[in-house]
Image: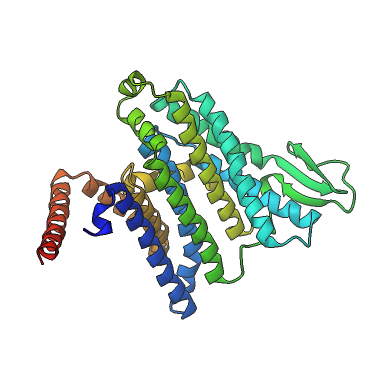
Length: 368
């Protein structure tokens, strides 16, 4: 009997998803190396990666935990600003420090600070659920980006100085280096690499680790406890599952991963500013669309939806004014198809036929 056959179904799914990601990575790297991939597609590779991270991290809360969160862009904003701030400050204080030390520190600190914000929001919504929870998370996301929009920071004589308000920091020496300038944000952020292939490799490595971590969390004992809460809270509490503990763990992990996506976003863009159109509720809803379109609770679906919805608006850019209209029509059409019981029955029948075909082949091999 083959090893693949003896694997648990969850293990086979993890291997399938991770192997598929590695194959896709290899194909893209070959296309980049041979100059076959257009510049437009090369510029979309890193956005694909951080959108995948955002989708699978929000899927933990919406799909696995079963709670509706509309403030995910706020945690991304925390990671983006803190990661960019760490990179800029280390570049000023330690100009000879290798970027292979700076970047890991930026990702780690950005993720951890986002997790702290997630913990604060998690404590706030402990007794809330449904529409009330969604409203509070939406408000939290709006508060977060507004805080960063009035934050000023500078490095002056080896010290870091902050100010919250509508004016610059007062009393700075002429040699002071401005880091954050309120609504203008942080500029001059060092990119991960000037080479498209290397930049994509770094982004993919981070994405791969995140997806691996999420898959292992979902199929772990903790993940099963979280899913039991989603399926039936009363039954989960009756068998002694600590609901508060597992809700906080999921929200904090989701915020941590969103923070990492934010760090990747800021280092890819090179400049970051806290604005409504970048980190507001529209961005949170866009991330939620990834999850809903891919199927709530499905990691593979979230990955595919994030890739398609990253590429589709750019492919439709040639249509100018009709681009977003067609994009919206496509979204509505896909959602209607996904929720159509007739189409779902055909898809299930196709899956069953494929499974039966593989079973027949395995039986024929065993008979030989």
